[in-house]
Structure formats: C-alpha cells, structure tokens
Image 1 (cartoon, rainbow, N blue to C red):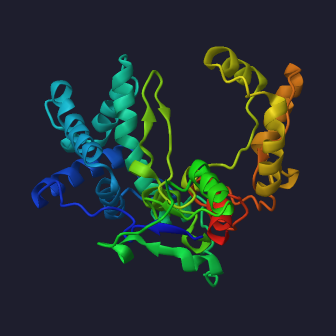
Image 2 (spheres, rainbow, N blue to C red):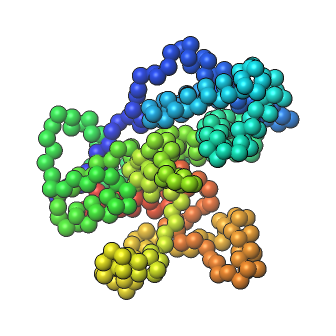
Image 3 (cartoon, one colour):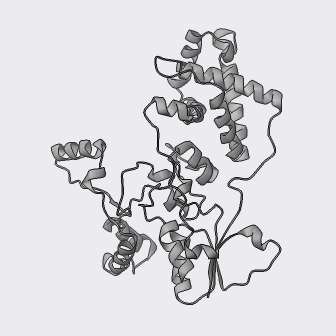
Length: 358
C-alpha cells in the first residue's frame, strides 16, 4: 500500500498582466490618493507610498481575474464619482475635499455603496499595514520564522505533480483535497490497506513558511486570496485553505460537537436516523483524543475573553473557554495564517502524516 500527496510547484498561477503600463500608473495614482486621504501622515506613521503599491499589485496578481478587474473598475468609479460634487476627479482634490468625498461613500444612505467603499479601502489598508516598517511602528514586529527542521520520513511520499507529468499513476483511490474531509478519508482507507493518492491544490507548508504576516500568508494559502463569500445580506466570508491541511491550516482550531438541536433537525428533516449523540460519541472521543482537543488554557486568553466572562456573568449566561486542537498553544495570535509553533493539530500535522505513514 502507498499514500502520496501531489502538489503543484508554484504557489499561485502566473497570469499575463491585465493592464498596460500606462493604465497601471493611472491606477497607482488614484490608489495613492485614496490611501493618503484615508490614512494621512501623522505624528508616528508616514503617508502611504510606493511600498503599498507593490503589495496591492501582488494582491491583484494573485486575485482571480474577475476580482482583479472588478477592483480596478471600482477604483476608477471612485475616481470619477467626485466629479458631480467637486468638478474634479478624486485624485486632483485637495486633502479636505478628498476626505469629504471619502465620507460621502462611507456614510452613503445606500447599503451597496457602503459595501463598495469597504471593498475599495480594505485591500489598500491591508497593503499599507503589511509593510514591515509600518507594522513595526504600530507595535507589531513578529519574530522571524522558525529555522527549517529536517523533513520527516513521510515526506519521501510527498512530491510535486510535475514529477509525474505525462505518466499514468495507478492507485486504488484518489482523494481530492487534504482538509478535514479528505485527510481523514485518506487515513481510514490507507490504514485498511488500500493504495491512496492525495491530490492538493496548494503546497505542503511547514512552520518555517509561517512568517506571522497575515497579508503575505493570505496570498500564499487562501483560495481566491480569502475573498470567497456566501452571498446574502449580509454576505458571510467563507475562507478556504489552498494548502496541505486545507482550511484546518488557516482556521482558529475551534472544535465543537454538533449541537443536539442540529442533530434532531437532521433526523427529522433529512431522515438521518443514525445521527444521535450516543452513536456519534465514540467517534468524537476518538478524534478529540487524536487531535488533542482541550479547553484554551487561561494563560493565553488575553483580555477579550476576560471581558466576555464578566459580561456573561452579569447577564447570568453560561460561559467557558473554547475547545481547540492546540494542546501546547503559546498564544501567537496568528492561528488563521498558519501556526508558527506547530501547536495547532491541523490536518497537515495530524491526519495527513498519519495517512502518509500508513
């Protein structure tokens, strides 16, 4: 029997530029005008500059083509939207007038205009504060990533898909995706003696890749750079991982059992009679033991849980720490961008290695 993970070599597809140099310069001019109106220089922080533009270009290069085009259109829409109010394009307004126009969009009576404004400024703010010198000025100066560890023995079964380009790979089962569904399925099948190939869209990142810089990690490990959304009012962000371990590598590690009322609904509405708390309990217990699920220790709570605790007690509500699969959490605070200490037992550190070792 054998289990393997195939991954593509590039971290993001390389695409031809979607704008000419002249168009890019025009876009940069407008973006800088927006950034400097929204985040003007102050006593501590400098005004946004070309370093922001470098990161915004990286963002647009990694984004799906339709999102990149839509964002460019939104920038130009905002540029020309000042004309009816000021008889000037936005990038030619003096600072006071530019700020007033930002506030027109920020406080617009139409909901969709406010949403468009948020979509306009969020990548700009992310790009600005992703500049290491800027993040250092606001007190965020993460340590360098951990030094590389020697690859574990099971990495002998990890290879780029290109290594077998043009070949026919014979196996019993192909599992597409290495998140909680695919990784567990591959483990169960491999442990029963079946030949299994795991296919993953992203790379097999290890802790030396996790540099605690959210902007960079989103470009590296999030599908559609984190812009997947469940449509509705409001829209609900639905981040999806593009890395070995899937979304478990980029989520907070919260683990909870399906609530009783949900199981009851599944039985009544969908005929899933086997889904009872009693039937699922041993399976939960097995997974929780393997993933080392436990309450978040008090020493890494921070201030927010303490505020929630006080509020819940005053309201007479029950409360308690979250259950998480991080048995030696050090409180790094970047769970959603890859755990830099390997504390979180995401699929890349738990079920995928177990499948590879089967």
